Length: 294
Image (cartoon, rainbow, N blue to C red; front, side):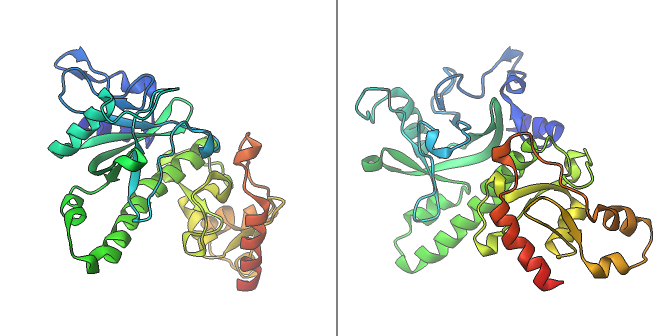
C-alpha cells in the first residue's frame, strides 16, 4: 500500500495495470492484482490481498454487480465460475473469508478505463451474506465493531456514516478519474494540462441528486470549477459558454480578464467519445439555474 501511495503520487490518481508490475518484494516481482479473475490471493499469503471491479462503459455489462447495499455499505460478489452453481468453498471465496476472519486490509482496484484502475485501500470485509453470494465491504476499519452492534438506535447513524465514507473515498475519486480521463486531462475551458490543478465539476450537483457519471461532469481547472459552482458563468446545451453580465462589466486585472471574461462565447473542449460528452438535458437544467441567479 505504501508502494501504491508513491505510484498514485506519480500518476495523480489512477494507475495502469502495467505500472502495477513494477512492484517487487525483497527483490522479487510480486503481483498486486489478478490478471484475469477479480480476487487475488498470492501463494505467499494465507488470505486474499486484493479484489477488482472491471471497467465497463455501462455498469450492467460487468460480469458482477458490485454495488452499494441498503445500509450504505459496499458489496463484493463471490467468485462464481461460468456455467457452475455458486460455490462458497471456491478457493477465491475462501481466501476472502480468511481475510475477513483475520480482519486483514485489502486493496480494491476499480476500473476507470481499459487497463486503468483507481486503487482504493485499505478496505475491510466485515460480514458475509451467503444468500446473496457476497461480502460486505467497509472503507473504515472501525466498522467491525459498528456492524456487530446490537443497538438498533444506531442503525440510521451507521448508514449515514457508511454512505458518507463511500461517497468521499470512492464515488468522488472515481468520478474525478473517469471525467479527467475522458477529457484527456485538460480543462474544458482553458485547456490547462496540469492534472493536479484539475477537478471534475458536477453539472447537476450531489445535493440535487446528480449522479457521479461522466455525462454529468466537466473537466475544469480549480478556478473555473469555483466560478462554475458560484454561477459566474454557465454552459448552454450546445456547449457554448456564457459569462454573467456582472462579471463582464468588471475591471479587476488580468486574471479576471483572461480566466473569465475571455471564455464568454467560447465552446467547451469536448471528449472524443460522444458517450462521455456533457448531457444536454443536464446542461439545460443547470443553465436555467444560472440564468435565474444572474
